Length: 252
Image 1 (tube, rainbow, N blue to C red):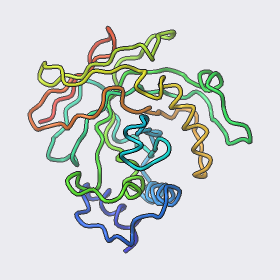
Image 2: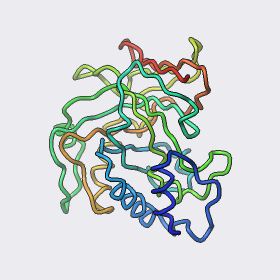
Image 3: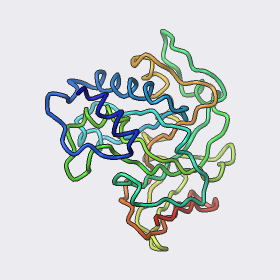
Image 4: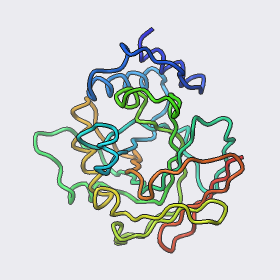
């Protein structure tokens, strides 16, 4: 069985792959992304947009990657805050507070890279949000990083929080994640490549190498501004962006 077939079955059955034969691990990132896009196409699920991850040098070093990573996200997994998930139905869920951008136009492939100012003009709105990342491989026994890229870079559920007012300094915006009222993580938009728009610009210029591009109406989660936090059953996790209303997620 091919890696794409294994991942397709795992997606449809909402389960993890306990053992991955070493010869099925993609040789490089481009091969891994090709598998991920093949799986997304075979699923036939309506796309939401994209996720970005590994936006820090520390995470890139851990994954042995020279750049951030990306994966397709799916509309069926977008909910609004407050959200409630059955923990047993999730696959090793990891909470990451992120900035969510929605696009207002296609960003077609072209010979010259997009500049940040051009990407800013293609943004309809920015929201506070949380990705509840999942992986089709157990986190206790992860295969090499390229296999994780083939799994959509660990894409999972997406919780949409409040819209962020235009003109807000996203880099300076404080992000705090708490569990049952106790602060567990703290960061800011500057954690995301210096500014979340920089991550979005990177994706706009990177996707054409994978044979695709950003499209009007897509949402992009730009990578964690708070670090990663494993969610446990029975917990209430909240994320607050500046003075905006908090995002609430209950893990039953």
